[in-house]
Image 1 (tube, rainbow, N blue to C red):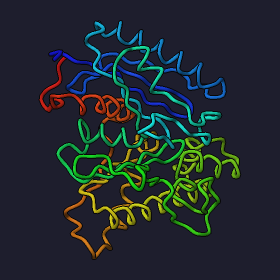
Image 2 (image 1 turned 45 degrees about the vertical axis):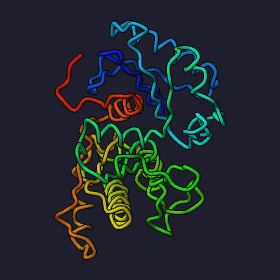
Image 3 (image 1 turned 120 degrees about the vertical axis):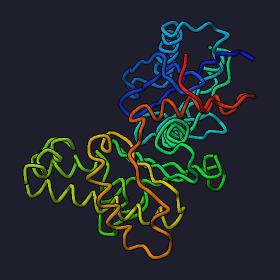
Length: 316
């Protein structure tokens, strides 16, 4: 076996695609970011992605024999078994698009696809805030809200291998409607999109402006942020009572900036719990930040190799 295997980790989001060369210690050796431009068509996106992978391998000084595989985390819904992206909600026109076959044929290595939230959760369990813990639940707060569960060291799946959409846990029956089919789900109240949309009704252009205005005492902005905090705390209550994780990891762009704001609301809610030992569970910020999905996507490759991924110090 190659003594120094490398993997390509890819994180496909609604607005951008991040990719990186990652070694078996979880260290990122080279990285690239490109706009998703979903509306330009899926074939074009795959071609641009393949070109980015070529550049990443060159930048990391990787020989073709060094590449062990490609792991992809993508905003869902996705079908990991079939290698299909089926997400017309945030990736316009990407309906049952095969992302695995063209990359496997292009680079001659195994390619694996997972939901991006599952990939992020794997990354945090391997090299982030949840190392050595099991079970773990992770929520990622960004344009939308994704969630992943790692139990028994594996990605938790539902019926027919489906990914549990934790961002669509209902928290307020009187809340706004969501494309998921219900009203007042977590994503419809606490995602960047939801916060920004609510802010526009108060003359604020986007979610960052809402948070900034709230710190200045803007009444409408404070209400929007408080509503998002309450939604997160209510969802966390449900998730803790459902999965009883040892740790809830909060990641994504919103948590990179406002973790304490949300964690205090969650902790205050959990103090009322009587059905489990509160001291046995914790809430933590994602340690890998926006790299969680990249590292987790690479972990998809290393987990399937004959030798385990390294748990020792980073090295190239």
